[in-house]
Length: 348
Image (cartoon, rainbow, N blue to C red; front, side, top):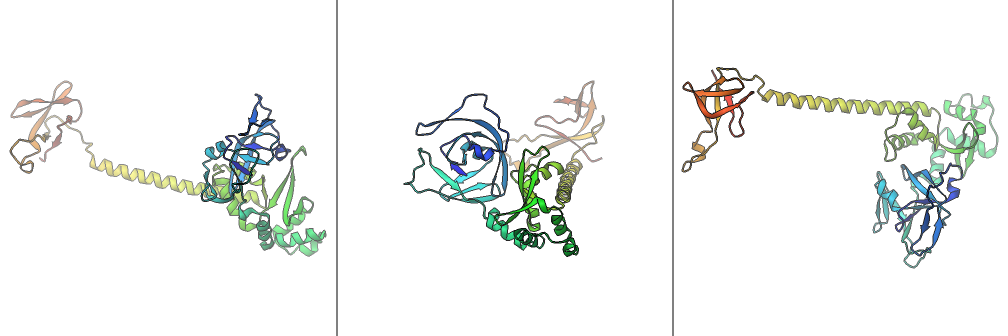
């Protein structure tokens, strides 16, 4: 894969999508390089990419380009990738991938500056082969496959359930570049997919990325399982996905319960400090009047006046002093709390 900082769209070579259905373009698009060269667009496709542990989908243009994939700025912007040319790295959520950069003397047929991405070491062929050799169930099976000899049932009947499961699908398993893979074919036989037989030690890592990673979406069991089976295979994968989703759902439920508990606690504290008793005619209240007189220290002046007695007219409340309604101290129905003045109940 090549990053093209002079291209806005992502372009893929046709042979990369040979087994996929491609949509023809409704308009006649023409690609034009910085050097003025033109190239027709064959079609568009909703493709799935993986950089490091990040799997994502993006619409790409298909054209007869020299490189297999040209990653454009639109894709990096949409999925939040951060390209740092000084540190020679690209960040994709959880991963920071080191990139190799061409020298300034190299030319690529256009005036765009481009950098080639180096694959994540954890998913390189050599690393995967080493991980499979460490797995007690996969290691002997690879040796049998390379020898071309299928053992008898009596020779493996005392082995683990996983190894016996792989033995049962002997014809569907192949060894390619030292890696054990399973051949998956759809019902109409038009699509054949090579699934990596995943070592048990890598199962949680795959489930974490497929279900909750940047390219994931916290899908349910079926969607998560379908995404897993696009690239990987191991026995009891459905049970593992169901258990993973169940545990994640339990964690989410616990988090929601704690948030609700904290919300209820804060509401209870707030309600305890509020006055919900209301007012009745004849109640004695104090009037909040923070007006200050010049020439006297604010510390020596009172902010409350009263007590006053509440009385109610047809639609408004009055506060009375010495049997006479106080001027300008009426309010609408409800607690008497004017903008700059408020009342509080006095102790009886």
